Image (cartoon, rainbow, N blue to C red; front, side, top):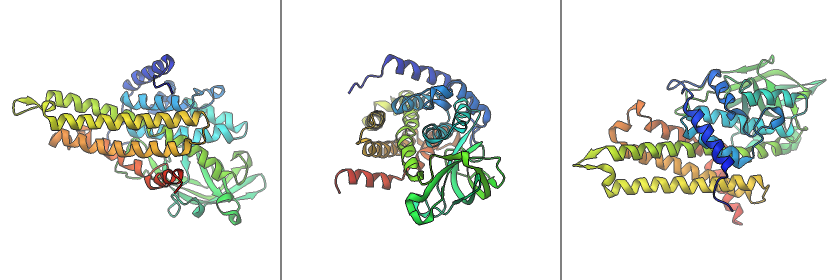
Length: 377
């Protein structure tokens, strides 16, 4: 395995990182607006892994992860980066691989440009990790399907133009009775609730969405009836591998800030970085970052090669990034002292943004189960 990024990968990452540094951040506590989405689209971030013939970058999983990491490391807001990753990985990959023409091309062109915002609607109040408990239904009626149900924690929900959602079309088939639909948010019977008041990731608005007799054209069925579970698992492989890359970028920014602080801050007549306890904490933060980075790159590399071991590698990488991001967030707060506890300092927001890693895209407990099964348990 070659651990050295290619000149093309380095150049792409440097270009995205520089461009991200020029983007304004959303006001603290507010989601990114359409202006920021379109600005991200102009530098290619909203279309990284979408097909080139639809305006996307045509990138594989590893190149997508490298680009998302660079985008966040360059200074893009973590919540906005999260929203873009969800738009790309949970929605864009599904449309690219399974939607039917001409709907596929029309939607993907907008997604790639950042002018069409996508949201993934799978989770329900009684169905998080257990997809067999989905209550949302889709009933065929002539040239349409009629959807009824409520989805929760829909990232990008308040802004979305299209929602990729999962509904039961064959109740008797259980887990194999799910189907996928691309629902335009202007459709009669669709309603997005107000943005949820979250503890972190404020740059990504999330909401509950409701389908109440929502009529969706048959042309907007993604794939075939009953393919929902397989389609979802495919999109989750992309999301679980590539989305945590934004946290690699956040941890790099965090480590750089901590190093600068520890070189400048003086106590007892010395820089605090000269104290062994402080220096070793910084070394541990870097070790966590570098080890989780290598696991994530390896997982993406295996996805690009369609390796049978990719699923377990993705689970290992997601757990590693999760634990590193949270632990580094705690250490950064300790290194910053009382100053870091101030809302405007940014130290606390790193930790608040990292905690949901334990939950989204498959909980840490689910990832641990995947790892355990991979060991034959």
